[in-house]
Amino acid sequence: MKPVIETLFHEAESRYLKPEATAEVSQYMTSLKERTGLYRTLRDQEIAWMQPIADELEQAFPAEQVTRLENSLRHAMLSLRHCAMAMLMDDPTYLDLRFLGWFKESMEIHGTLEIDSHLHTAIRRQLSTSLNTQQFRILTPFLDRVKAQFEVQAEVNDEALLTVAGLF
Amino acid sequence: MTLILDHQTPAKQQNAKKHNHYSFKDFFQFEPNKGTIVDWNDAQNILATEDFIIGLVEGLEEEVGEASAAIMYTIGCEWGQKDAFFFEKWFEKEFDRPVRQTSLMFLLETWWWPYTAQGWGRWEVDMGDRRQGFMFINLFDSALARTLGDVGKPVCHLYAGLFSGFFTEMVKKQLGCIEIQCYSMGETYCKFLLGGQERIDAASFWLNEGATAKDIEKRLRAGEMK
Amino acid sequence: MLSQMQRLSFEAEGRYASDEELRFIPEYLKTYELRLQTYQKLQELEQTVIQQVQEKMLAQDPNILRSGNVDLAPKWKRDAIRTWRYSAAALLMDDTETLRDRFLLWFQTVMRAFGAQKSCNATYATMQEVVKQHLTPQQASLFLPILVLNQRLLGSVQ
Image 1: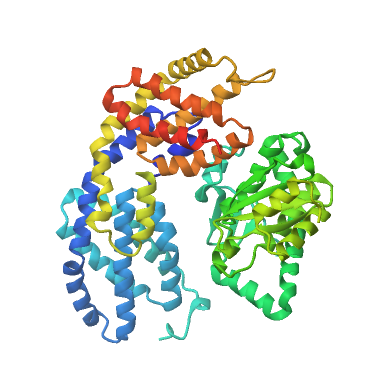
Image 2: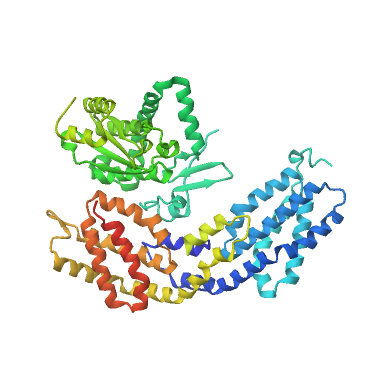
């Protein structure tokens, strides 16, 4: 949950909300209707938007096992669902704690960086055309956090992480 | 490898002396990267499921049969004794006051709060008979009893031991404890008698004869010893 | 609101929440302005209300804040302020669950340890009367249930 709201109860006995904090809370509340709307849109359009991406995935990676592609597709949907919730709460740490840590390790272990990165790019493209500017702007910080995982990964070329699955 | 346990949730960083810190999110610090769960008093915690409790109890019964109750009690005693030392340290740190100069009821409620936060259940201490040398503890939502369900016999030996060990150490008198009523016997909550060994023996004897908790309370208050 | 959102983020993890599950959000937003206004009013009223509650209680029972020779008024005041502020936060967030978890359940055991249930009962009953004189009916409708909860949890004699 949005930090300024989480800490409201921590500090409650010592102080009331300062004007800046109040402004921050009010701003969030004002945006909440829009966020809820966006959340519903992401939910309702999930299948419609993911389908074409799923369809072209096999063409993009003809040599890949179908099960690996399916797993990555599932993870891509998961990442978007987590982004949606984090966006609803305006809380990036939710995304970090509940998803990105695990996702990063999963990519390392299974060697799916290329597939996952490709999927993320495709989803981003889809969203940038399907959402209006305002909506895409609200979601972008969270998408960026996911994207950052691929960049960190690409730098790590550690053969200690190589498994049989990721050998060739 | 030494693990340094240091609880640093936002709540504690903001005010380490805040006394009401027992909600789940405040009391426990989860560190997925280190694989630790550290509580407010810098103690290591682990999460155990009901399967663990069942495995522990039934496994022990399989190994030593009837003696499992006594073993659980003994384990509880050691635990309670060790915890008394641990408690004294963190209490004095948090309240800037020696335990022996603190209101007893407040001290006890403070001791028990971490247990509540950890899922051991809520309690109520009945000091009404303390001048006669005994007291009662009511326990709600015993982790053991709730897990094992209605099995027709008392099961909270670990708790009885815990109370015995802790109070013995705090009061500096040998005190025993026995469960006289249990959720696992179909009651709505568990009740423990804490007192000198003769009272515990008397209660044990009466229990074997089929006395209820109410009978035992009545007899003890009437001054009966056997 | 806070605990509802936290619970949602946990229960709906890995999937999307249904409209029913999201319903608490628009419901809360309907009352947000009123809650913020009331919260700020409670901040203004803190000193006045606590003072008036103390006077009213002592008028009804001069010994209610004494224990033998000990004057409990300063401690009572600190506790009353603390509870008032937590209650205000709960009102702003429409979150009595967090109020219970983070404060009332613990404070209840402390009050019980010191045998203070009777004075708590009087405190929060009196506070309801006093608050009605200072808040509009709309504002009161949001805050009074919280005071009732305080009275019930802190004042119940067993």
